Length: 99
Image 1: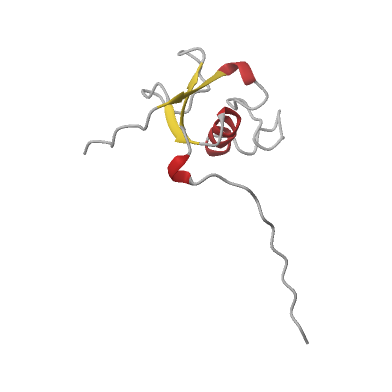
Image 2: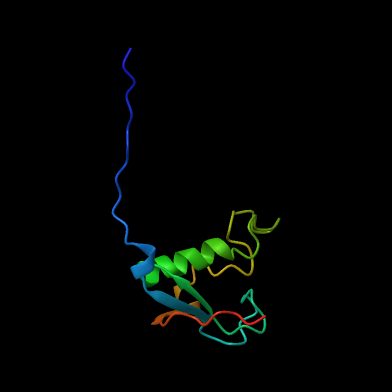
């Protein structure tokens, strides 16, 4: 009996050639920012939209909401649904962290 396989082909860029993006809060005093003492996070992405999505996935803040807001990934502190709260800009490769 033959075995069938299904493959999904997606077009992606080689991670080595993907640009770096800095993600930071528009307001430095925004209490939702999950990295106190760190003004921005730098990550690789295809484009600014993907950089924002990666940040939101990595830092959902309250991943299961709260009793008042029982929606996954939309609890108080989440940047989801507030596109003006984050600034995403292309940047250079970050320096290696020092020990």
